Image (cartoon, rainbow, N blue to C red; front, side, top):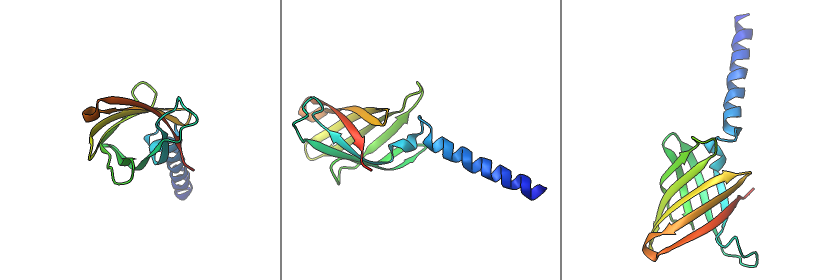
Length: 129
């Protein structure tokens, strides 16, 4: 009887962990490679960038943003309002960038403020399969 109860508890524990990872507010949904459309208002433009989120933990998320080699710094997640939001800082040879985004129906909607270049880019992103 003890082994049956232990087995059921183990199964329930595993099922709960899986449900948490697939819940609509699970930060694990951010993990993967995203294709960023840097000009979502122009369907004829093929100006794409990447965001590859490799890891999520209790402190935030980690990976690259815009192109390979540009590391995500200060990746943070917030789901207080019932929606999943992310924010990050990145840097390259032309300056620093503050980026924020949110997830809606499997798509990211974001903006990137290029501090040293004096512009704000609005973008969308879809996850590569």
